[in-house]
Image 1 (spheres, rainbow over the protein chains, first blue to last red):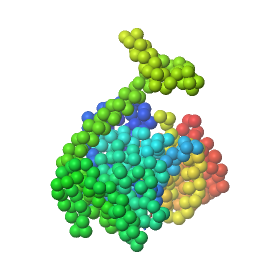
Image 2: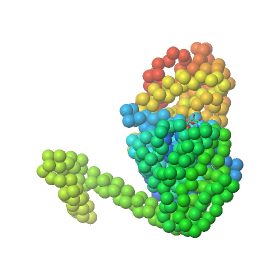
Image 3: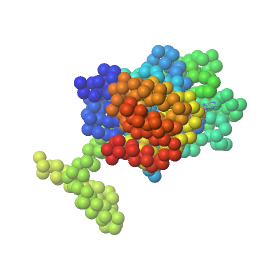
Image 4: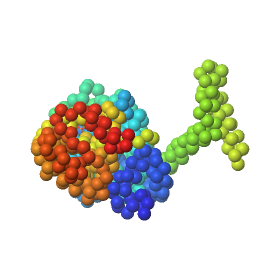
Length: 334
Length: 131
Ligand SMILES: Nc1nc2c(ncn2[C@@H]2O[C@H](COP(=O)(O)OP(=O)(O)O)[C@@H](O)[C@H]2O)c(=O)[nH]1
Ligand SMILES: [Mg+2]
């Protein structure tokens, strides 16, 4: 049995190895990804983003516990930054996820960003795809959380949860990072602190309006009730205390409501379409670059780049000439 | 994508000091490794489960409590149970010289006593990885 088949059959060691293969972009990893692709597209992928220290990992731990109490399996992918100096990384999110560490219904994987900007690693999408294919119905993706832009998680996740916390400076962290635009659900964590109300008010004043024309409006009220009406998605602002285990049911209800909203409004399908195109385009790009390396070669490429540096040629024309060279070489080979 | 050495750093047992473990974790990171840090009071099952899910190349234990002779066999057993007997186990902490051969006999790849230079740990792990 090959590694993908073993992972599909529930062998967690095989799954784990496969995730490494995918992360390292090995021949085996690539082949398995292609083999598993037909099984993907089922899981609800939830991104958890927000500034470092907001309580993302603690919240993921509590959320996962709540989900496990309901008997559902889930996977967690937590991304931490790679040190630009050494290429190494300290992956510490497991520290806050002790409660899950012996529960075989949870698969938790730490990833280093490996130089990729945007809050996730280049291979996070592929890792999520494998977890999706082997049957985890819910996948939580915790982003790096470093100050820079985290918006790429929106391209991997169906639902983006923005975690804010009181007492982290005067401004709302997310405004700077452009995170408000991608948030489907806003959570003010550390609601056990009195300053949380102030954070909620500040967020309410800057909350994005209705997004998109779906068919549902969901508000998560005090009565833990999710009401659906005809309208777009209104980004709810929830309060949680991961420390005191409060607000988790409401957050779970909001996650489910958002998933239902995406499905019923047709956005789930639209996103699959969008992702499919992005994936194909990204592979096309990689194949083209590989072809460039094979057919034109590094030396000729450098020579062309040199002409651009000397301003003897412009980048657009240089790329066009390289493309012509690739096509000629590929044509000649046939 | 270049393969990175992934190391699980764990502190089994009940003693509450993880300064040494953190120093080693940072040194390994600075040597270009990806270190999954799990923190204090890890049970053998927790350690082996984390090693499995994270697909680490090496497991590092920091044990200061003196309970190494009871903890290490249990960690090794849990790793074996998960088909991970091939993953080298490195142990550091307050380990009396007499116990080092005992641990090695059990299957520990390398034992580091107090006052170990972190670079020696880096070198040992690189060697275990054939680098
Ligand atoms: N008071 C309070 N502290 C919290 C809460 N959630 C997390 N924390 C603390 O905030 C710190 C950062 O948490 P962590 O989950 O690592 O944040 P992350 O960097 O966003 O993943 C830790 O010391 C947590 O114990 C909460 O609901 N209330
Ligand atoms: Mg975290």
